[in-house]
Amino acid sequence: MISGHLHPLTYVERKIVSIFGNLGFEVVEGPEIASEWSNFDALNMPKEHPARDMQDTFTLKGDDSKEGKRVLRTQTSAVQVPYMKDHQPPFRIIVPGKVFRRDASDVSHSSNFYQVEGLMVDDKVSLAELKGVLKQFIEEFFGPNTKVRWRPGYFPFVEPGMEVDVSCVICQGKGCPTCKRTGWVELLGAGMVHPNVFKAAKYDPEKVQGFAFGIGLDRLAMMKYGINDIRLLYSGDLRFLKQF
Image (cartoon, rainbow, N blue to C red; front, side, top):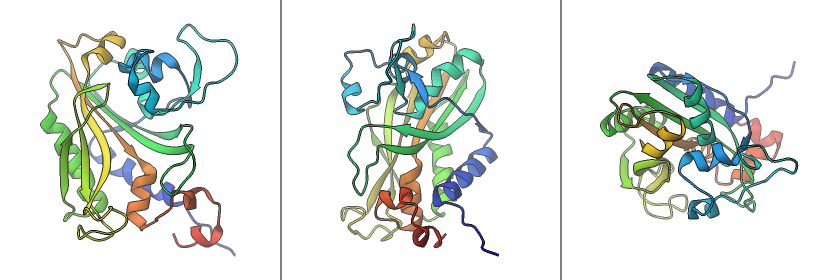
């Protein structure tokens, strides 16, 4: 009998779901085809917003909806506002799934890859809670000795926003090609949900607070298993998969 092998992305997704599940987060799915409104406008990125230029989008042919053109979602954040419109806080959710961007394929980029979106909304939610949740996730995923660095970051749908770095698990922070000799690797972006996002969901930003974060699943897999080329994850090469 020939035994099968789970894909490393499957291992990583199951680990993420387990960790956040223990923290009270529910797994939610969303469509890979989104409207311009849910993918951009509702996330505080109107048509002239420069952030749209950072995400080269696949636009689908056909009739436009009342929410604009149909696109292949560029981020799992596209699930945020549609979910909030159908649910009332408090809630904690994560949204794992595939996203698409018109990127040229190289060692660190692909036209389709995986993300995990996180969203927590309640009447009182603090930045300290966000940092506590992410720190616990990082330590459970990479190990208790993993160092974490918080940096200010800009994302249109959060304010304040921050980027989170971890000590390179390949060289243990000593410096290597993977971390560009810095000892640090950028892991995710996060922040407090912008009031305009709450308004798009018909929430009163004076009465609710929340945080959101986005994690690249592929990047986590590459760091966890020391994979130096994202294309290996999608090659279908059994010699590669049999290592897991």
